[in-house]
Length: 470
Image 1 (cartoon, one colour):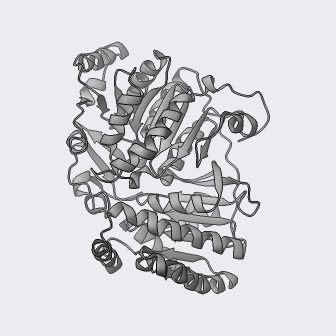
Image 2 (tube, helix red, strand yellow):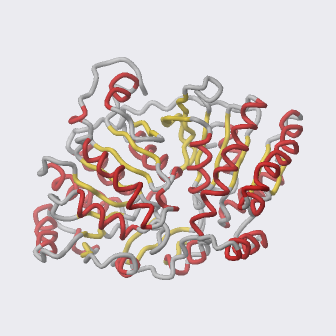
């Protein structure tokens, strides 16, 4: 990723993005990398010097955040400066990367709040494009309603009937119409480019968009996505708007944004899709899995791995809500894990096995009793998970780990002292194996997979251990 060659000026970089969680951030990086766009993902906004000296040839870069677990007040304090900094990089497109299942609520990860910030910071822009659909991940937006498959091979559900998203512990989705969902988070008007509007000649499609923008109150436009042709049409319209601007165009969306843009860039000769350089990861002797995901997809993966001989330990996450108990609880757990690793076992540390695990309701009850918000659980538990993972790696020298759960991934990765990641090899769409960059030689070169709750089939853990898709 940081090989030799002429340095690329910032103004020639095509895209930068901010991910609202870590698993989604690697998803966007993979979408760019697999289409020939050299990309690196940072844990903190990089300096121009860091980009120039260590990653001179990247065409795109991202910043992995944890804003999905933030309240609107925290977003105002912490996300606003990050979005202002992204604007200063001068890339053609600035993408706020959200989950392809549109995870958000008025009090946690509010996409409406992000839209409000964008309209203030990028006030020169006519509108903010919104793209949620990603056909390669089986995510579709049809007449404004969003649909998602339940796992790699599962049935496709309307979002408000999805077995995981309809009852997500932090951001449950009671509404599939994304414009109505956003209306609970912001008063800004959102127009729709529905499926028929995206069909036909490019000029006709562009004219339909202009008619929707004739209402000067329109703050954003949601694009339907059912298939690759509609996705490319959205990419063409987004790039046309970005090309007409001197400052970067702010876009909100899933990795569908990257797939849409790379499709159009390839058709225009701006990128070479054959310039993809995956590395051969090879098989690892051992794998450590740290899971904060309670989705049925992750449940099936944990159950399959346990049946294959992985050792599993349920983490006492309720203890980690209480600072006075957290450290002693973590150290006790560490003493249970280390002998298993020394025996050569693959180990899974999990907070819950599926959405029906009694531990979930017990945690909610405990949080209510302590006056904690749902967003607090990610921070409190994630920090302890990160410290535990770091202690395990330092004590054992393990070099390949898998972290499941978006909020979990963010906090754990930060605790490991990693400052950047690049795609190493493809495992499944949305869940690549990454190479980590760190100043600590014990963490530099670490092989890491960050897995969202809906990513991968039942054999995903073993695929990561083997280092490839089969």
